[in-house]
Length: 104
Image (cartoon, rainbow, N blue to C red):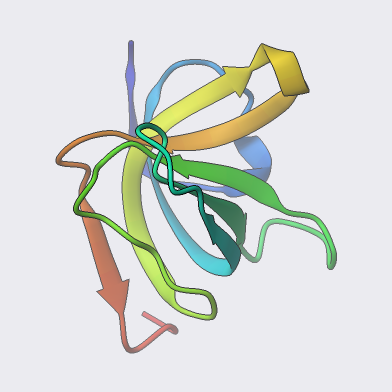
């Protein structure tokens, strides 16, 4: 697994398996009430067209993302074959920082 340098755009995620850092807004989320993954939802950033989204999944039991908030997220660019879906996968101990000044 490679580490991409700098912030990646959600539109550029392809399921490569690389470790990526993104700045994105959570548009919706679902607590799965399951063992793993714990949460699934949708992300958006300025690289995407209006209405486009990118899925995320959370495998860290202590992490929950909230709709409407903007975060810096470090995760895996993952392709989930059963759904044909590119996802940002957040594992145990993933770096997540909520941004209060979203223009930064």
